[in-house]
Length: 472
Image (cartoon, rainbow, N blue to C red):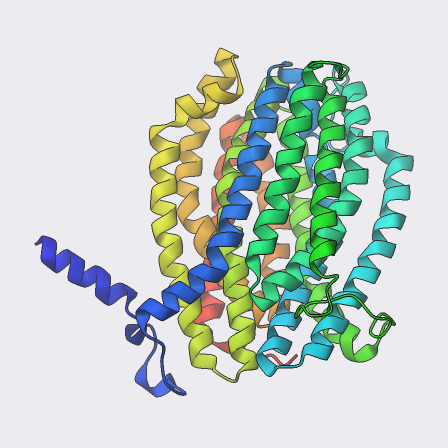
């Protein structure tokens, strides 16, 4: 029986069983080579995402020692900050797709034009966004659902965090280009280093260690700023060498050109629409959860942080799928684009199984790391059961949608995101939380429904193979 199970697993993973004979366009790589190649893209990006949220969790644990109000005050800016970063993340998807396609074609000149013009655009956009955010920050927080008991703390923290977001936005664009060429290690190390700087200064500035002042959550905000600047500087230095495949040196390529900006705009506008729909949906979602009270929102913020740790792990695999799909389509090997998408799906299933065991078996212990409040611990431990189940559909959805984005098929993703995230999830959340009286449980039931639907539509599109016909 044991041997039979091993043989079934090998069959499930083997490259030649991932595609039909009629679809093969050339020599297929060995299973060992294919999985090693995928992992060389995926694991640095996946570990980077996981490590960032691990450090973010340590950050939240430190803030949690200041009380539930402090957790809520730092959490309330989360969704507005994500809206602020929507443009850079959307542009980042475009940059990854276009850079991967140009690398597959062997066109290094246009590859670097894409990087330069994208970086210039996001710099100008971030300055305008920063000025508007500073002017209306308190109104934004109130609209997000901030309560009177912590609005002052939240405002002080948010003003610093939006400055940090400008540096993050530019780093996102550069790192997206690195992902496109398969250099995910620089993405890993730049973000890890920046986040370690964040944690180090958190220790000194939140608690006032040594000659540093005790600044509480303002100290946490300053630490975030220092960490973001560190990540930005590392990413910029990484593209300041003429011998590198990616380089921003030289005067040529900085002027906006239709040839470069048009495909970036086409892909990016759809991804931006998707991100805006997601942010609107998440904004309304977070706002409704905030209205459930401080204990519920503090619990939700902790659980969302834990959920996002694995979400970012899945995002790393999504980025790998996106880069490999783009490169293989650029090489005119549609069969390999399909194969690497399916390899991601299988590795994602394994990762989700591990996540399920961690969330389910360690749920109370995980909550006790963040809070000493018995109400928060009890409620959060139950929510983590939902998160454990959600890990399967969430990861599969991310990997399939990563392939679609890498191919430039972003309009389809934007359409189902509008319907599911911006419309269905807020409606379902309100019905479950308030009329049906399920409180925070209702919010998380709505989330797992959202993730399941997204996985269904992304996988349906992947297997239809329509994404392979997109020209960039």
